[in-house]
Image 1 (cartoon, rainbow, N blue to C red):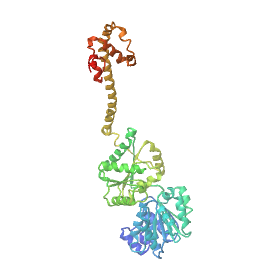
Image 2 (spheres, helix red, strand yellow; image 1 turned 120 degrees about the vertical axis):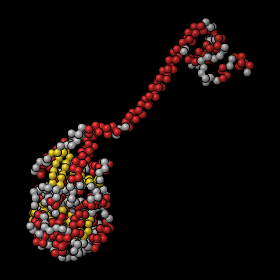
Image 3 (cartoon, one colour; image 1 turned 90 degrees about the vertical axis):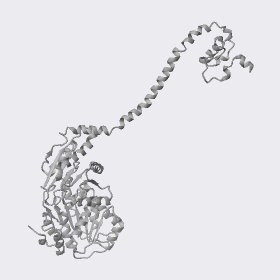
Image 4 (cartoon, one colour; image 1 turned 45 degrees about the vertical axis):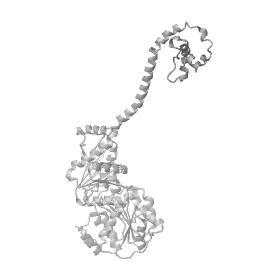
Length: 504
């Protein structure tokens, strides 16, 4: 087996490698380092977890050991698709250059421009950046790329496939034509490879594994899932995830849980924390300082579950990840390879579990076509759990206590009109029975002389309902000359008799 000492690396670099605990190079390192040291362009294709980062960092710093950086003109450039991957490359650079006087600058979003400008002004040997922040510095006139001797594109397929092609082409146009270019990736689709041919000149193609293959040390399974109802599907899927984690028991020391959407990352992380699991989210919308703290906690072991979007799937090196859970089936088959590659690294064993809805079966078929083997199916542990639907129904009932209250509150105004309607009905029922004697007494009042009513034209202008009955009441001697038919609101002077009014 080849050793690092046989790869013509700088003695100081070899010393740092030995101190890091590495003795023999991986296949991608063994194949890529010699042509890179010769100054040739390199196209490296290998599955994740095989040491591609060291495959370009070691020859790069060996070549840069001779020479001196100039202000605003970096000598080498490393492009990465995400902030986390760029930070990881910077850590590798620090590890292998501990005995060399080489400087670096990390240009990523979420960090102050001033601090980055200070490093660039001093002059750096290695510039590690994401495309967007690199172009921001260039457009501000703080950076020149005419002194770049070595250019590295890490995760080349992702860089070109995520819409970075215009930025990559522009960055290449700003670098010298005589530069040395290194492309490293886990997958390389034919159309992407055709694009890379415009950037590389007679590259040494190093392919140590079949494209889009996962490590044989990773056990892969998929659980077919279908929700009982559409409104319960999301909660039942999260419950299935928790059940899968619990069933793994002590074997699941830590895990990365991948979701397709950032909103789902937050929801799943909150759900896990609510149920007592030590989990935290990481995705592109979070502040960079929070993303760094979360990732550091996961690497150190203080955080057990990392819920992530694909921003964490590319190239992150966390050596001892026991499990990967795909909460969603990835839309691109290549992303599946990158996701599960977070476990089973450096010869370790790992397990990758995926939850598949019926609508995701096409994407599952595309993944199996890419990896060229069927993924074993695992029985849904909740399918045979009979008490589960009852528990879910109880939870739904507990979540809906407010509906009956809203129903009763709506009935209250409905009950009020009914009471109002009943009240007039009773009031109308009383006049039907109460005035009956008055109606019967009316014929007794008819014998009264009609000429007494004729000279009273004023009574015709009054309401018939009260004035007519009032007039008949005044002529009725049996009533003691008192007005009949007026309510409690009747003025007191009207109730006086004629004699009383004359006296007054």
